Length: 239
Image: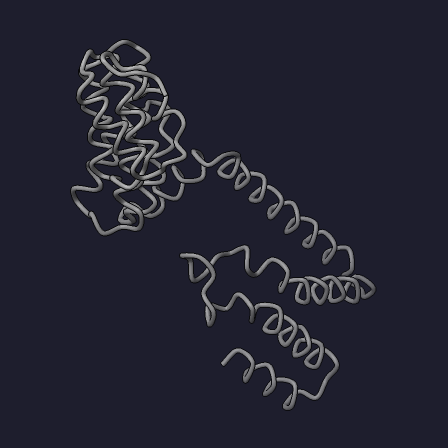
């Protein structure tokens, strides 16, 4: 519809300005085509960054229009309006960059704008500075909507981080609970089983530590950390 409207305008008006608008529109559509969503890249089907380069045509056209208008009687008014518009857009861009300063700021903003988005809420929770709080928030989201993309892996990662943090503080009971939850949610991760094995060995549970270490080795025979831990447990010879 957009292209049809531009062609109709160019044919009906038969003026250079209409033709220039048609060219700018064609350039926009041509440059946008690779990211139009006809062929999907990643999870997103659309993103504002896809229009950055295609907008060059319209930007040049706007610049030429301002320059032509500025040569006429009300040139100063046109330039003043253009300067005000540029300043306003610059201020909005400066404000927007504040939301893009890091992943935590970005996803917090996205979650605030889209409160019904499980993905946005999960990504925002994942970047909370308190690891235990991040896990609690993600677990809550997972309970409400276990179908959002990579839900189990995200909760497992958060549980693992919170568990390691608890382990550093010497809170063995909490560490074991969190690390076992992480391994349960992502049973194919040898790294999570190894972390659980370390925690179990520190908690004085060598049998469980050996079992977790073997799980890690079964998943990844090249996991040297699991092999060393298994050999260092009481009653076992190092290989």
